[in-house]
Image 1: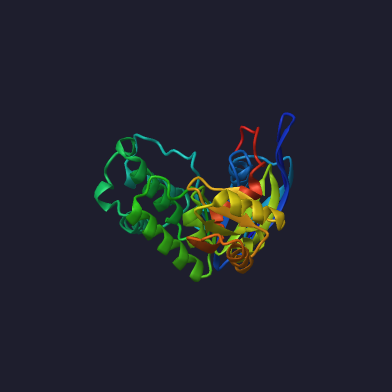
Image 2: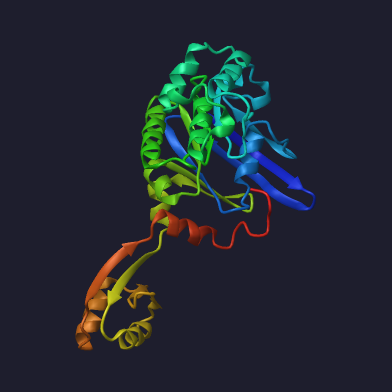
Length: 301
């Protein structure tokens, strides 16, 4: 289990993470979301002992990261800013991690095969493409067969096949009872893979809930209407107290009036309807709505 308690970080007069508290439990994939500058990367770095907090604590399995004797056997971590030595081979890089954490060297070949890099084991990292480098980072995270995974933008650079592979891998690891914390800006992918969400803005907790519950509570539900006379229908709807927005495709997006009432209103006014449908916002729409004014003005992630 990952436990973050009152975590705080300041840079000069700028508070990047402000009293952040949350728990990531095993047996599920938890998405960690926030706009640019919200404090996600800083939180992950404090969690992994790379940045010292000004207040509060982050514990993994009950211990701060720096107290773990063999951290790669406890936490598999992938940070977007982590860059291995470009002169090493893929196998050499993983062997170094294995030696320093007393991991059986046979695991090097196993994880290289798991991420599809067996053929590149002796290739120098400096020649890797973005996708190959990402697969190597995932191999390093998996090397110690850890009970906890902390991954920052793990699908970055992966092709569609790689994304599908990673999705299946993370779901299977969560099903085994491991703790999986996943930070990503790809909302469509997050909506598919994440069971729970932690959403932050300006370093503060905005939401901590199941993905379905998050959408139920925060997603915008509206009625899309298409008619040859949108301006006349809009006037009628606004008289009824509806909020109406003209979409780029010429349709109307209506809040505050149900589809059945719109149908009755159109029939009474002899207004033809070409489309009448109810929509609920996607995870991306809901995230942007919740965090739309958050996270601006900070240069720290």
